[in-house]
Length: 225
Image (tube, rainbow, N blue to C red; front, side):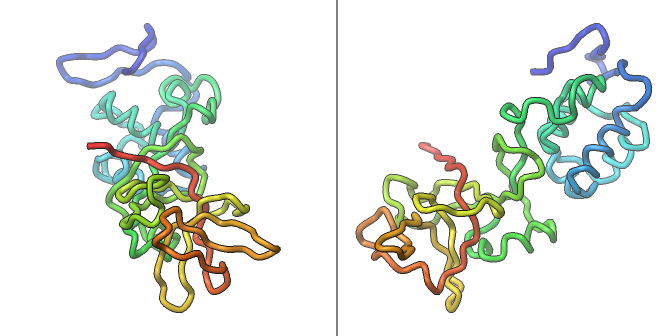
């Protein structure tokens, strides 16, 4: 729900917002500033918000007549920025990082081993919301097997950080260097060596040698129905 003040008025007949506030910079200029700060293209932002790239271009040029409240909120969420800053120019662009949310691209499991390339090419069609800064290098993927048992059930969505250094005890996504197979395992250290451990005892534990670490699992999203 958008909390409004006298500085913003909703025309219910046209479902458009008339904005006032910081007159030194327009909403469109703030959208462009945030988008460029976090290196997000107009096309990528448009896809995340659910509008055309030409609509984003119009907003950035100062034409916000077609900018609906829902799109405004989606834009702030997609960029991981403070809505108050976007609308009024008040406060900080990022605001409270703990309360910020960003849209994380969903990469197919079979492509998770090359997720960085897939994201750069903007070939992702689905996104999930996660409470991480917009500049974090994240992707999401759905685990297709029961190797992690009840800890991470089949069908759970994993939010994976491509840059966080892995430590023993972390859940990680790895790719077998020879076969290219992707798996989710817990990284453990035993007698000075690193191993990949599944939660399901039907899957044997393997040395970490011969595997490339894709990233660290930061969040697990489960659906019960």
